[in-house]
Amino acid sequence: MMSGNTSVWRGLGDSEIGPLHLRLGLPNQDAYHLELESEPLLIAVSDGLGSKPLSQLGAQAVSRAVVKLAQHCVGKSEIEPLYWLKLFHDLWLEELQDIDVEQCRCTALFAMVLGEQTFIAQLGDGDCCIITSKTIVGEQQVRFLTDKDDDLFANQTHSLGNKFQASQWQFCLQPTAELDACFLVTDGIADDLALEHRASFYLELLSQYRQLSDDAVKEDVRGWISQWPVAGHSDDKTIAALYR
Image (cartoon, rainbow, N blue to C red):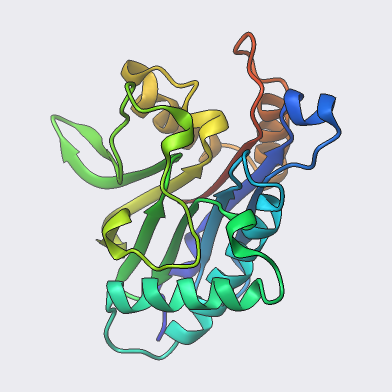
């Protein structure tokens, strides 16, 4: 299946270990993947649960499982979201053979450009921001797969584990022709964005990065993700995006 007009797609990705993990000598428990060189184009991010000692392995396995899922999707004429999500879960478990899966719990956010449709899915916290070219009062349309709940404690997120639970996933099939950008970030970034500035943060990134070279974008992302301005922040921070 051709993904159509892929030459215009650009991407970015970066991850920064949080100050708390740095002080404790722990690894970055986030992971991300960006695929622009072959079809299907895709992005993925994952945040390992801080309470699980091997969660960085789970997060890294998300990237590998999404790549394998994309390979399964090539040539398929129909997109069946629940089937693909179950297959992704099975592939993730395969990546963690001989490892205690309960100690690898993590979130999963990914997007794959599959011809006329882009499959976008999220399990757990973080932001999945979708910016489309449909206009509302002259502005781009911004939506999120999940709504922020300020009353929800950070340790109450859904996560990948031994059992596939379809009801915990949020997903959509977005017409690719209307898609301007998809930003995926872990909660180290998402939780520090005030609700009233949430959409504008991603719109400003898109507007700015459309005007910069790929090298300049990479340098800028490295700058702000490594010098996060929020006082007292402690979590790992990860972003991946497709945009045009």
